[in-house]
Length: 222
Image (tube, rainbow, N blue to C red; front, side, top):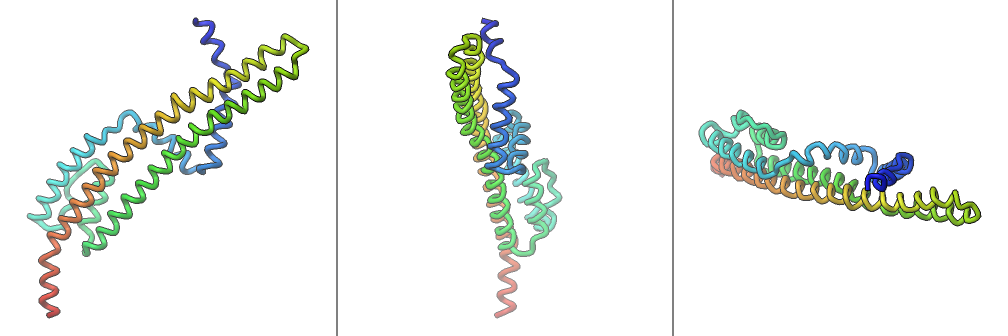
């Protein structure tokens, strides 16, 4: 069994497959998205959207309390480790119009969704490219095998190339790239859900706190 598995690892063939997949992915998605897709591997296992959601809800309670006691200008004093929530609190504190904060929140969530979608697309591109390049390697191996029919010693390497490229393509696509893409899509959906919830909650706070000012300005105009 060990001997069989040892034959499944061919560094040169694997390097050629990975290089081809990398080039195809780079051409399809660009360097920036490809780099972000690699960087997304770091939080792949450690990310916990439920924990982040609960922490965001706890922070929102504090922001709401601060807004009621001290006003919107003090909401950025609530400390949070999440960059999105910290930026939202800062925008809320420095924003003098509710509509401006609503516009920022909608754009920020849309931009994050776009970045997440680009990363997801990269891993889907890898999942699509791997079997295609594996099939190309299989064809090359078969051509080499048929071209060397008069030399039995040359049949083995060509057949090995044909089978290994198919094997690598299937493994990379179905056991690596596709599961990563699915996991990232799930994390993205749950992360964006609590971020939209937090943005909506902050928008409601801004409208509540700005309502007296709006009524006062309307009375002055009248």
